[in-house]
Length: 136
Length: 114
Image (cartoon, rainbow over all chains, first blue to last red; front, side):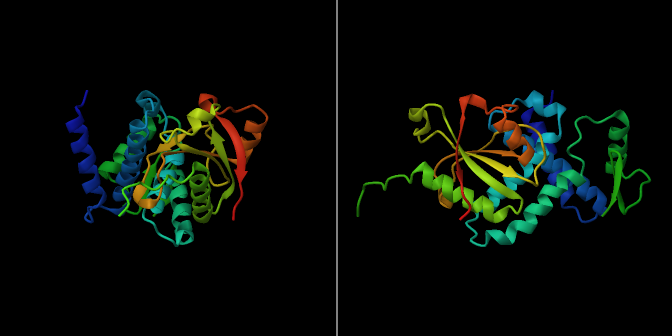
């Protein structure tokens, strides 16, 4: 089992990848998807959720991620909260687009996603995610 | 200079303010209810979170999933909070007993949008 230090390094590396402008946009978006999933899991784990439950389901991200974002907006003391409505709408849409809501991934899903991450001969303008392709 | 700390705002006030800010930022928010503990002594404990049940037409149906947040005094949030977000259909299920709140929590009054 990976140590906490190894996990920390892996998360940090993923964050760097999210910001690497040299990567195709589809790969950056995929790393962003993974980072959002880890963010949601980390939040739930620190608040006492059972980590085993989080291993088997992606559904929690679709509910947790928008609430974490909203809390961050509120904590900035911004009085123009209604201006953030459009951002909330996008944040709520993002996990759905990225297919976080799937309960379980099949072997094919994992292979496609891994291939997408590695850029194995796939188009630079499409992100391959389980059962769907969507244009960026 | 007074060395006496000002009293904490009531949870009722904090819940109202939190609910209004959530109404402002969430276009799909239709109703917000307070949730309280079954025991009043537990509810008035400052470490007991302010709990809101939010009905949002833009969320997904995934049952009752309380999400905890810590206090944030710099932003005026002096109590921890718990948000349970459900869809209008899930609210109907909750009213009919198909869904239940955890920890013996009770659905309290609705906070109106102001």
